Length: 440
Image 1: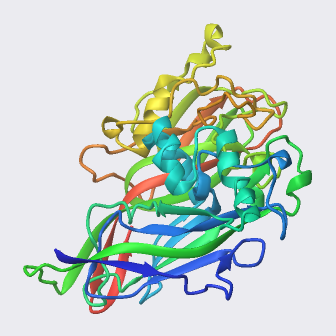
Image 2 (image 1 turned 135 degrees about the vertical axis):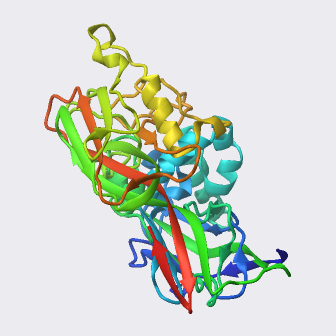
Image 3 (image 1 turned 90 degrees about the vertical axis):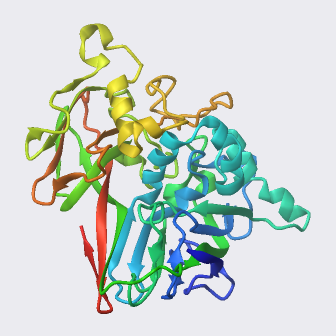
């Protein structure tokens, strides 16, 4: 490879004033990377722009308004769905629904508190302390407006997906590649991004966030002199698929027909269903299971199955909380934590993380989980997961058999808990005679 070039792309559906927001009827951002005989450098794709939070059309929030957003996610909280298509054929290459919830797990597992407090704040407006994030992102724009400066916060975030985080350069050619890319971002509802720090929605009824000056930047390379396209070209990449379900039982059984051939791992995070799209609750928090009275419905047993058989673990995970002696233990079971992290990223390759086993501790399920300024860890980072292949990278076949999870919980009341499942798999694009086919 040689001759690197940088591309800067503006949305194809940009409005006349250059602003995009869910409230004002512009919930979609479309970005086109044209077909060309070049490769995209993996990991170079960034979404750049500015974000402003408003109490209403004319007023920037004050600290006393108590408007918050998820401090662990920052700007990532506004991306509800990330879809990547072939520009030529419009064929779907990858779609990640609930992208912001997937990022809650990914960022918690792969970044430390120091990351959140330093470069992550500069690039994606994230911070481990909710009060610092609130003052630095939501209300600091008022001072800029009063002094005549720019009232928006700038950001520059990697677009995290299996395709864009791969190791192989992405071919854009019409003849031997994907035929260009169309990147489509569906913005999350304001009510699921913003919420009250005081459980009072009075100040939020007309509040919303707004994006401006949005662009996509990436780096492309020309093929090297020794590159020779074939009559049939293949490109293998990682993909993330998403699924949703709810449970409301002490003995819950979840089954998903994945339709995927090379599954590498699956992980899920949880939030009470009533917290989603609520002005008074953080709908993007990654909590443990809970009852209707806000008490913790701790997990006593987990079993992962494939077509009803225990796979890949040939045993039940019995947690610390299952025994009588451990019923009041607020430490998250190390087996759950380790398997969850290993499903998000190979455990041996995790150099830093903000996940620990104190997942039940200091979490008041009846509040917003970080009310005090002295809570610095960004709240709960809990989840469940299992890896199927951390060595050969070939994965396990779930194309015709269901993926299942059996849970034994201390759920004693009528309180639906939402589960967001994310499955990491290998897929292949075959291009020949000007057409492409995605092999899942």
